[in-house]
Length: 130
Image (cartoon, rainbow, N blue to C red; front, side, top):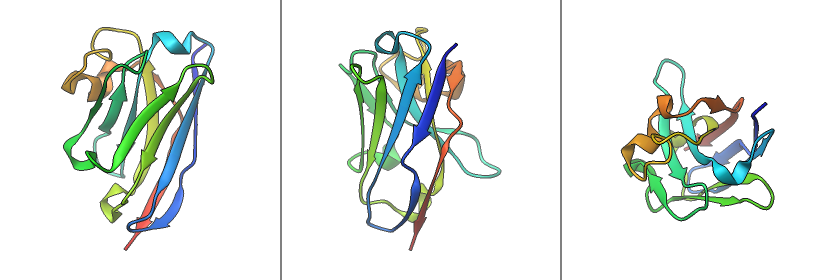
């Protein structure tokens, strides 16, 4: 079955950097579009960045453009999120998600909608202090 395992979260000061990783197993990783989401207590899960199966396109929510970079290494079955110039408002649990349906593989806003994805990891916590 599809399994996603995130890692790389931690605590940093504002302006710092972190790189999150998500390893996929149990499916053909290179055939699935993948995304990063984040969630804080009491709020809806928010799409952060998405990337196509081959890495040919990526899409970001406005608040992270220019600071976060999504990438993937299909040879290693691994998705990444490089987060630079972190801000306290980036504090959240970060989840990776994957699917091969049309909505997830749409190079636009639909790729950042949570119900576009059926498969989710368990999350990794990112805490940014001011």
